[in-house]
Amino acid sequence: DSGVTQTPKHLITATGQRVTLRCSPRSGDLSVYWYQQSLDQGLQFLIQYYNGEERAKGNILERFSAQQFPDLHSELNLSSLELGDSALYFCASSVGYEDTDTQYFGPGTRLTVL
Amino acid sequence: AQTVTQSQPEMSVQEAETVTLSCTYDTSENNYYLFWYKQPPSRQMILVIRQEAYKQQNATENRFSVNFQKAAKSFSLKISDSQLGDTAMYFCALGLYNFNKFYFGSGTKLNVKP
Image (tube, each protein chain N blue to C red):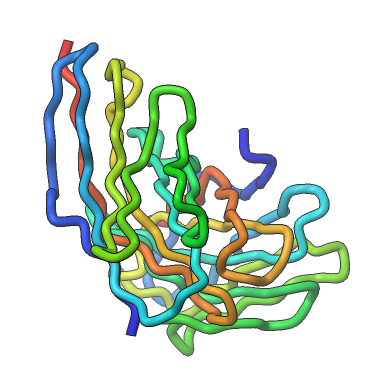
């Protein structure tokens, strides 16, 4: 158990809908990262937050947005969902904001768009 | 640009034997860390081992060890006494100081056979 929690575990929704994925980092970690992993593919970095502020942006679509709250939990919002958005979404956390910090991953949220 | 390459999409090994997974990377930076993450069928990402680039000594964690060749930009993972529970996808990753991104390879699927 990495100490990072993600809810929900599974999410099934329809095209055009909007969903929110939630992540709670490990106690003491200030950074939260979001990744997308499509079927049989590697991890695509979406976005990073550090202590409430956006720190880095990767291949995140405009339909997607995220935020980190004062209690350091983070939410990833996905809107106008398309079939291709079906994937496993991981949240990871680390102590600092350097990319050399070890990232601890949550169990992931499996999103299925029908 | 930074890249991480895992040239073996899939490998098999007999239980109790040793297997080595390859990873090469490219960066012009001097300060960085390298990681191996394991993703079992449960799809959770688990940190296996971490290596600081400034350390010449190869990292070791129980049955897992790395062969870090900085000049060759090679970072292979050796798994000794393979166990059925080692069956997983293994990702090599590169983390750089002052860069806002974590670079993952495409993964190697390891199958440990009884």
